[in-house]
Length: 317
Image 1 (cartoon, helix red, strand yellow):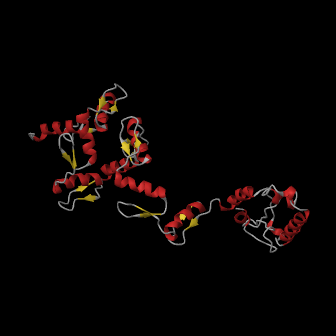
Image 2: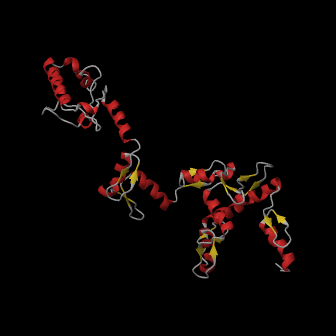
Image 3: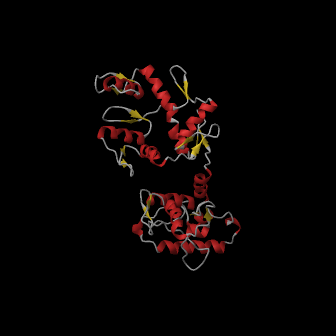
């Protein structure tokens, strides 16, 4: 460790070493040249005066080799020197010479460079993908095992990643920090705000390759595609009913378990899905966001608007 910290050998003797800061400063005592070496060893009292004199003479030689204009600073130990050197790297950007990726810390760059230089020693038994860090492999394996170690204390739903749990908890806390600048509607997730804004812009970037129908969101397209494919890979173990998406199966199974994890903070009524809770809360708020284009009557639920519209169209269900 001493060799790494000092790193600069002058005078041809292993014992006669001094660290020179990359910015031109020397690691020496504030009071005497001998004191610095004492900070690295508790053996100073037992060693000969000959060695002490040799160190002193050698440090004086080192100091002669450093230009005066470099404004030497003094440090009592190498820990202080290391702390000082961080001042010089603060705010710097470190670039990977192989791929150009940038990092704010040299240690992060060193870890990243293992991708290019180190032979990956850890491989996924499921897909063969290799990793240089065991923590990366552990995270990756959750994809195959579907391990979900982060559990919501309010409803019991589990997640692979803590970040996903934190996002989910906004359903229970009611936090909605993302606000639409067009209509003022607020959302708990930025992705939901971006999806909502397409109502105002009319943007529908996701198109079905079979029929050409366009959708605002990718999930809307995936749900639509099952019309063409008929694929329903997620089956209920209780009744055998199948679904195209796992999330639909999770909601369905609450019919069998009777679970209603979403509670109204105003009246305490419980619901099996968050969407039912949102609709219910409009009873308390009086919100009616669905308007009839024919007569202007408003409704709290889109299904109520559809039923009402049949008055104007004459359509029979």
